Image (cartoon, rainbow, N blue to C red; front, side, top):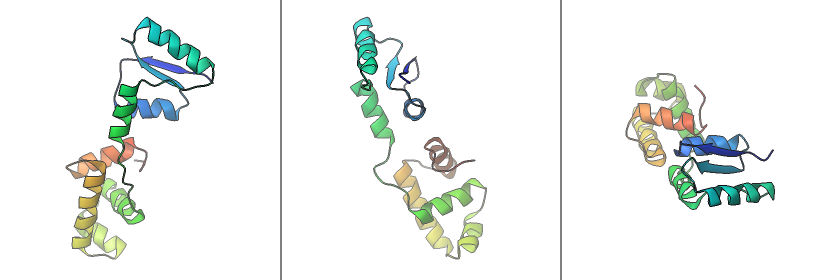
Length: 129
């Protein structure tokens, strides 16, 4: 399908979700008429149409670093409300190692707290709540 999303939302999550759902174009409602017509023509021709500013915003929101399998395990247990001690016991690792994994997760997701990490991971489709 050749779908163009015309919206007021410009957060990386909304852009990502629209593209994931199959949108070939993504424009903000304040887009100039000429740019809208150009986008329609491009999408009709089979191209994608996302303004450079939105592409940059989307790219900035996606970390270059991916989480390791173990970091995803820690994150999933974290999302289920487990404490560091419980995570350590379940994964047969030390609490110090859990804390190390959490520091890496926070850095890679660009967050400062456990709650933010869970929210960011959920938005990016890394975990399902």
